[in-house]
Image (cartoon, rainbow, N blue to C red; front, top):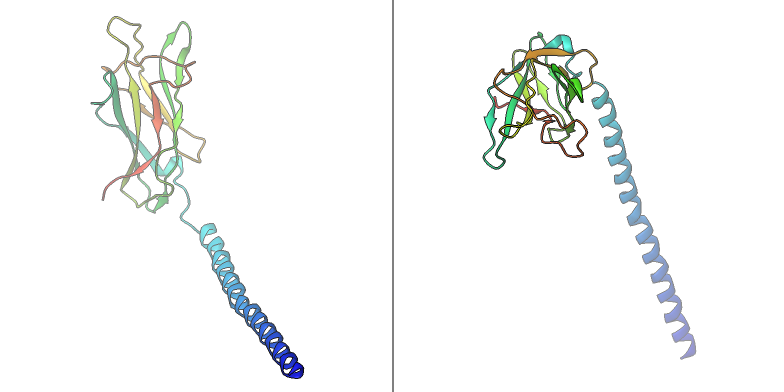
Length: 196
């Protein structure tokens, strides 16, 4: 009887070892699958390196649209900042552009208002030749009777570039200067893909 129990124990031990071996073998395909995923992930890197290059300043023309009052924020307006791809090729335009408003010399802040940026646009965006993509400039106007400062022009640097484009600022849209504010009411939003 003792031999039978020993034999059963040995058989159970072998079964457990076999199961462990099977479990170990089962993890190998997972590891291989991870390796395949790693290979697939590795294949993404070359795709990223050959992705459509960013639009350069030379590829683009800029224009400002008509200011539209925000219904949820009295005194604030959204001004479309539209980039048109004037080149003969598709390029990538995404991120937050740099925007400076240029106007009269303010006694406190000077003639240039550097707008803060809100990174709330698309993560990646391709702009075929002849089409557009836009960012929005949110503008807080001065309260009635408050100090008024109206820019004459806007300078914008497309994301990833160093050379600016210029557009005329709407003559009837004053801006409340809040250069030193932590959360000013005037800022530039990220680029969004324009509808086809």
